[in-house]
Image 1: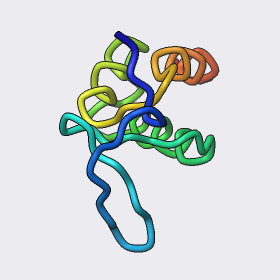
Image 2: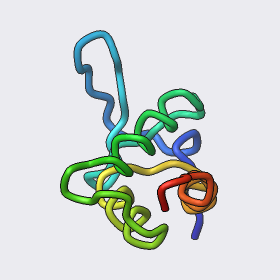
Image 3: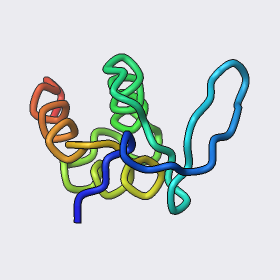
Length: 84
């Protein structure tokens, strides 16, 4: 079953000036592309990961975050990395 953050009514938490939703202990990321890109960049350049493969990066991110078409976005991001 596909779950989209826009369709659920999870609890909403405030962090600084940002509000975000949590569903099943995962942060729901809205359709803001710049936020998703920032998460991709941090996940990809993390000192613990150091340019992980698409599968590793997706598995790491999906433990904490949730958004529609996440796997495709991670695949596109990793495939555009010149270092990998």
